[in-house]
Image (tube, rainbow, N blue to C red; front, side, top):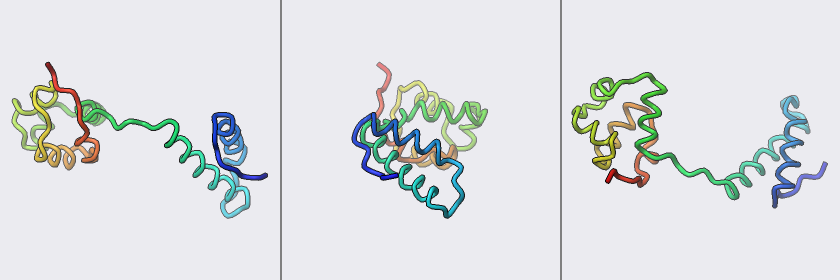
Length: 123
């Protein structure tokens, strides 16, 4: 099998089909090496052709709270943010400051690069 660059969706689909065939290749085998190279090519193609925008910071906070089963009170206790300040952030009345980003990133495990993304404030 010759491995070549992925230039279009046809090449991409073909590469995915080969990856599926090679998925259980024994580590260290020639098939495993092909699998590794193909997954790198697929990742590069997907990043270039189908980029994923970073999540909205407020939605990331809400998602993490939901995922961890956290209430607003839990987040207040974890971050030291006041009830009013957290409410303003979650309702988009106030944008995140660097201090908010640091506290929320550390407490909720959300990467700071997600929280620094621009987002729409409420009306």
